[in-house]
Figure 1 (cartoon, rainbow, N blue to C red):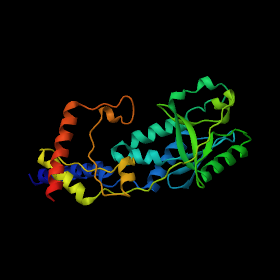
Figure 2: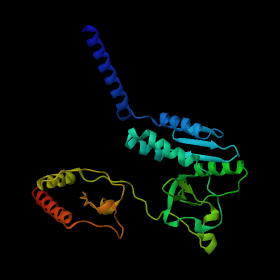
Figure 3: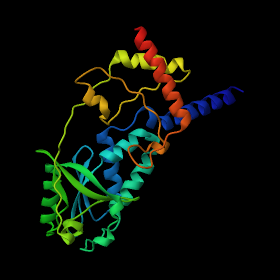
Figure 4: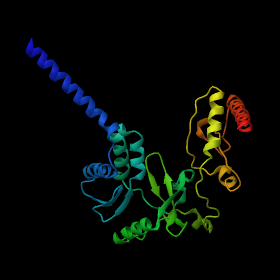
Length: 275
């Protein structure tokens, strides 16, 4: 009987240990340095003939056997992983598959590019210089599409497909075919501004008065609040859009949500008048 109790105790301890080990990705996510090391190990296995080196945390350099080089930024990969650490294996598989796939042929045929998927990407001039230096070292005269944005940053154009993001080259510039040039320059720049804590608290109470849960969130967009901040305090109430699509012809809100928003604003004005 005593041996049975000892066996049960050992079994329970083993289950507890395994359960804790499985939970570690949630409670102890990998640091950027450790995540970078995981990608290096996976890429080294997938690309045995290539040399993969770490330039810094979340940035790799890959030199292929044919002399071709690539600079890899893992910031988005790490952001995806950090949102759900249990997806570590999935995130690594997706990025390794994208990076180890056969290179796409670069041709002057602009029709091969899905122009509906072209996106601008902000990169540093250092990143562009390192990329082009690597291409020159491999004997390639290929140049990527980019525009000046500021003294330290540039806009690089890429085709964002379901499987990978591929930076476009000058041979794929439709402007070359049509003799059209594009110049990108900032025409307005505003610093982030906080909403008024007092007004936000009044708005939160108005939401509660309407029997709803208060959800506070930061917004990357400037909205009118940035402009008005030089004149007065402000707070914002967001109404959800279908699919999260905003500032677009497909933007859509329900009548019920608009009714609730009007009700909350009326309660807010009553509280503001009484304050």
